[in-house]
Image (cartoon, rainbow, N blue to C red; front, side, top):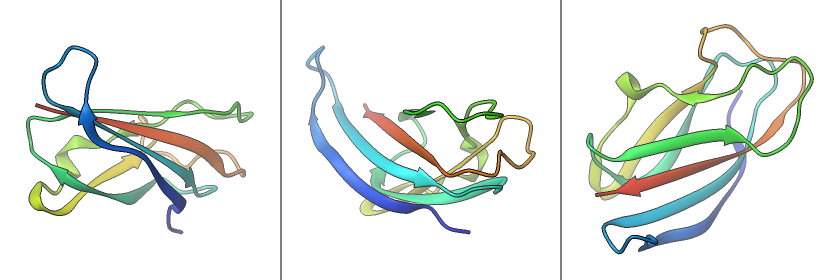
Length: 104
């Protein structure tokens, strides 16, 4: 299954400390999927990514970026892979999530 309902809430605006930029992407993570790809635009191997659910889902153990699967790009073609920390599949419910990318 694929990530759905992708919405870029903030795209590359300066962050609160004045260094780098911050991109915030809202998305719906598919039910019972171990991992899925999220296109994020520009991202390098040095950028920091926080991924977390924004709603409570029974049986969820949290969600992370699987950094080894990141595709870096300065041409707007970058992507990250999100999934569960233990590599298992999640609960039988979709989750509304948020990815925050701190670009240095």
